Length: 331
Image (cartoon, rainbow, N blue to C red; front, side):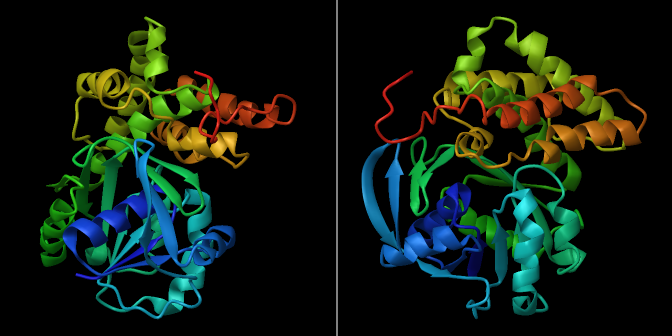
């Protein structure tokens, strides 16, 4: 199949490069952020790729603005920030063709409803990726972990098998994205959202790596579990069953923090230290709203949402230190 990856950020570049290099399929990149597009074009339509800060080398890619793109992909893969998606969809609207599939594997919630305005329900796939990746700068991506690190999960909005999903799973396996398939659409999406509501938001507030959160002995039971319990209460009240139990989710936070990605700074931190808005409203804020709508309580998610926004406001007075910046030698 042919793919168009919309958003040449950390995850967009990782997916596209792996599909291009390992699966050998045709990949186009559509970059709506002008500064990023300009940088990559200036580099000769090449991006820098590293793995764990090593082996930095250039890779040639096909990249276009939304307005200049004339390709006809089988699958559009959207890796945008939630607050940027609608404008990008508007710019691409005339490019979408009948029978094409949209895959949304973005952080947070809110993108599926937007995609439904442009794609039929039987051509929408939701996905989640537990694949640590850092964007050092526009056109400069760092894959964290070895070739087989991380995993991803996908579900059709119809919750039924499809030929496109079968072909996509084949390509994604060849790309080493370690995909799996479920027929639980919302449960699949919320599993990642609930994880991010702990790791991303808390690590961002305290400007820490995931593993550093575990320096507090009470992190799992005193912070992670209350947030997870509130999220699960809201989901269950809404009639959604996740693909992991509450205990599984706590264990996943433990494993990711201590074993698989202890040195990783989450994407929300990467936005925070670069002065950009975070997606907390689409993660903790979305969970808090879900609880309010379904008659459960989520005071911790309300509080975390406000704390992250407070941290954003405090950047004016206490600028954060970008621990991902070249030359940073601190811990």
